[in-house]
Image 1 (cartoon, rainbow, N blue to C red):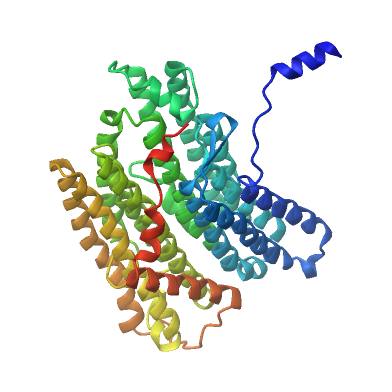
Image 2: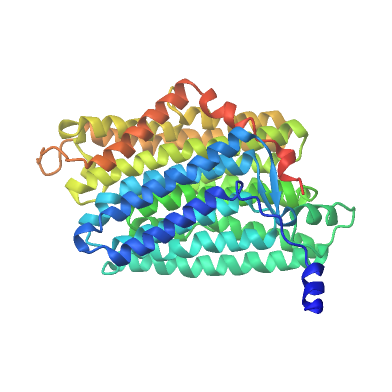
Length: 504
């Protein structure tokens, strides 16, 4: 007994702050309840699983709010897990995005005769991984969170088991996702081999010297490439169009918003925390990725006839806009602060716009059973509300005032101009040209809805389920409010301090 007591004394008991972990604990509890409910409910009451999922997500947001009001930065597990303003803001984004996706999924899953409990179980599990990602300050916890959020989405992308396109979507996403994870993990192993630590703050200290080790350069490039796949940056975007088109529409919305945001969250943590002293490696890499993603995404989107594929390439291009500020992090303290504000603000506004656009796609498909842009012809004649909402979301994505998208574009270009220098200005010019290009294909959809005739002459009104109507209403109001009163987002984002991401 004495020996056992001595052994126990030699191990430090990890500090666990249960208030800080409350959002994850509550969401885990909701996942467990979902699993049990799916086993106990019969087919007539399976619809309740969507309600459990929605309540679980909202309940998990309550401790996020209490932690934000408390205002104390909390660190656990030797500094490998942090709960600060950055983490709390992104957790709120993931929870609310997940809630909107649940609203979009409710009738879609019921009417499609898909198994419901497993669907919401996997969806909430992926959201839990995203919440863990926002607090990760260690390579191991980051990789675990990444796989926690990615593996459920592989299955969700192939959810329509009897649909060959859905099977193809899941297979492509899985194979390329596994390959990207392997490349990323290899890069992380190289970084660990050089620095001897997985903690971001210690990695930063190990890389702060003047020695330029090519192994470090290779490791950073591999890690960035792995996350470039997650955010569907060109040339690592090949999975996105087929996966978006084949996956269930709510899952496509989820992947385009929450999954993409999780990848950018990881990149921000790495750049401000672990790789802050090696901007000579990742700055030119992000410059190229941003320019390519915007240009290739927009040019290919011009030729799309399917609205989901168009939004997929639009998502690639929007990812390029979000990548732009990453190319100027480290130029100065003000530039770094402005870049962090731009990326986080853009992620929040983009989530609102894109979720709203996919909610309209889901509503229109209930009648047309088609994703072709031509099927939107004459939509105004029998669904004026949906036409107005879709027009708002499309022009918001293009950055037209007074809709929320102009705020996202503004903070990105402000970050580049704050950094100054020829390369930053050149990237801003590329972004400006691409903003004009994107307006063409967004306006093309609006033209179909407002000015083209109804293809089949059927002007039967579209019946919108209540849950989907709530999702549309929330996103439409948010797009207007953010565009008219930008401080609703910018004041919150300004509270995020870049120095916290570099804290142990």
